[in-house]
Structures are given as C-alpha cells and as structure tokens.
Image (cartoon, rainbow, N blue to C red; front, side, top):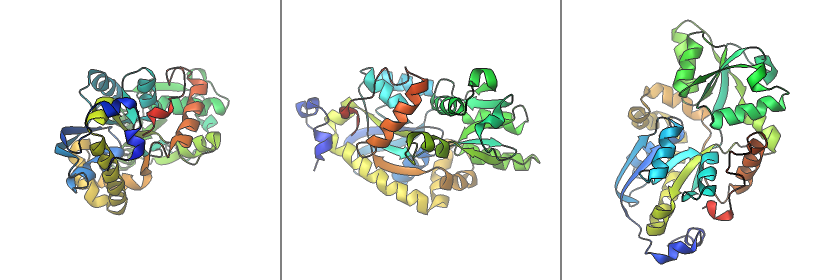
Length: 317
C-alpha cells in the first residue's frame, strides 16, 4: 500500500498509475559512507521488488551530480541535503526521500584541535569548492570569530581523496575530510611513517550552533517523474534502506566487501570507516526539524545556498 505521505506529496502523483516495480533503476551515491548502504541494500536483497534491474554507481563530484539530475539521467541519487533543497527550490523536480548520514565530516591533522582558532594562519585542504564541506566549515570558522578567506590558507581539492593526499604528503597542515576518506588518510599516513588523528569533529561543533545533535548532511533524493510513476517502488526503496542501514552497522566487514568495487577502496578501509559515518535512514519528513535547523544555519553565511528560501513541505517525503 502506498504511504499517505508519498501519495499526497503532490497532486501530480494522482495523474498517473503509481506502479510498484520500477523497470530499471540506478542508485547513485557519493564517494562517501551512504554508498556503502546502497551497495549492501542491493547485494543483500533488501531492495528486491523495487526494480527489475537495480544497480549502484558512485558519482565523482558535485558537478557530475548536478548535471545528472538536470538532464534526468539520475532518477535517484544520494546528495548533500542542501543541494537537494536548492534543486527543489529551482523547480528541478527533486524531492528528499530520507537522510542517510547524520554527518561524516572531520578535520584531520597531526594533533587534536581544541577549537578552530588553531587553524589561524595555517594551511587547510578543503574538497568540493562551493559545496557542503566548505559551507559547513566556513560557518563554523565564522562562529569562531575568523574569516576563512583571510585567516586561513585554504587549498581547494577536487575530492576528499585528493585532500587526504595533500595532507599525507605534508603539503597542508590539516584537511576537512568525509568518511571513508578520513579513515584512508589515517591508515595511509601510518604507512608513510606519519601520525594523523581525527582532530576536530565538525558535527559536534555544528550541533552546538543548531541545538540539534545531528548534522543531516546527505540523503537520497528522487525525481518527481520516478515518484509519480512508481510511488510504491519509492516507498519500498525507503523501507529497504532502513533494513540495509541496520545491516551495515552490524556487519561492517561484509558491507565493506560489496562497497569496495564501487568506492574503489580496500575493504578494511571501508569497514573501519563505518562506525564513524553516522549512517541512518531517517524519512525526510521525520527529519524536517533537524534539516531546517541545518539549512537556516548554513544559509546565515551563504544566503544563496538554498535558492533563497527554505524548501516547502512537499520537499520532504
């Protein structure tokens, strides 16, 4: 049976039959923790019945993600929740199905960092320019009384893996990384004879700003066209991801094996990253208070990040 909240998401859903089984569906994930959940969901049969042909792929960077959504070639993709909100507000037909991580960002350095003022005058690698890692970091830096552009030497990296390599090579003093790149950096530094640590938890710092313990960083977004024609399949997709999340958290070794070819990382790195990835599968409508607190906080420093306003109720499935 189609959940009422999906059926009533938009009147357009009533204009076409909402079939359960989707003929073919590619689940696109980031080069980060939530893709582990997608891989485990497919390999363990938690999404059987969602689609006749189902696969998982990883997008390389936010530019590829946005191009895929805009062109319609990506019908279901895990993306930063602020990106999903922006696309929805711009009328690009994107709804947020769930939140798949409550935050997996950390600053990695050679020593623990008590507060972000430690970075004043130092060099920091920051992946994905003009995207979530930068938005979150900049907001926290300003809360600490710093202007990131003036007080910190920022070195932009194309991906978290590139930022990790800059740090391991000693070309920067710290890096903002997302799991599993954080774990890969710690292990890679050890092999190179260096010691790195998870120096600063960005989620905890952000929680102090918002009053919410979580940083609902990324979730699965679906296109209106998929929702309109296969609402039952979309509902089954969320139910399967809830099961898959519990499986991944309880079985990191097995989950890492199936995610390794997609993330192009050794299984031990992925397995060790899972406890630090805060993997969840909260329905977007239930997570709306935390999402709106997060959106408001980043928008204080980046007014255009959401497209000028908070997304309407219909955004949250």
